[in-house]
Length: 107
Image (tube, one colour):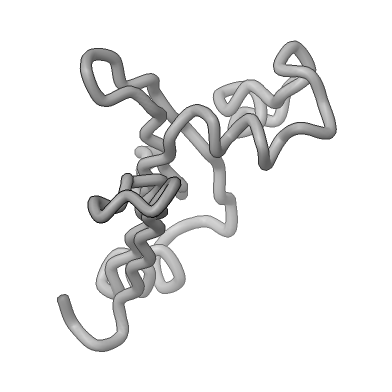
């Protein structure tokens, strides 16, 4: 990874467990960040999907819109479901934003 790109990973140990457990990962590559700043519209939206199977969570993606109205990835994060519940605890899940609605700007 180049020195300007950013990455953050959070793990935790519970009850003195020697093996830390994954909580979240955030990555923003500098080349994508520069491309968004220099060539895309100043719109930044969120999209995401659930990850099912043995390891569950959500893949969240910050996306921009390029001059051809195509989605342009800027950053992505992998988050465990319990972490999202803690962050968004102030509102019930029924009131959370639909990323596609947010991106299109409609209610």
